[in-house]
Length: 197
Image (tube, rainbow, N blue to C red):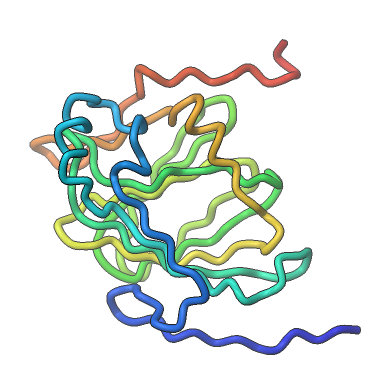
């Protein structure tokens, strides 16, 4: 039997992880084409704002039986009426689940099946949200301050960003006079599965 050394990482109140093994920054250019209002996106691209950062505890084995964890900090902002969000992904090993835990701010966890059924879960500090196997997921900052959460997921889950980049996400989270509103994405075009062909 091989033993892996225990690992601890300090997570600050603002969601940053000073001793993170990896930090990913996503600016608007990294999400180009994912927002519905392409004119607003083009105008904002001139400034290319920071949209979110991911702080990973990546020094763990990426194999069956292990968990990885990270924190994500999504900045407050909008592209047109649509709130800042993560790129969103399915897991490369689609039968893997994930757990999110809100650390600060206000946001929404947007989920969808490969067929386009979608759900949204409101998140604040102290909210635990479960991402079931086979569901794509994206997080959205619906507040006025950074939205921060911790994610824990199987180390072998992997990422499938391509499906959402190609097909879009089935729903959008937009600002309205009554607050954040979930609407169907008119540009969403799921690729039929092999079973449906």
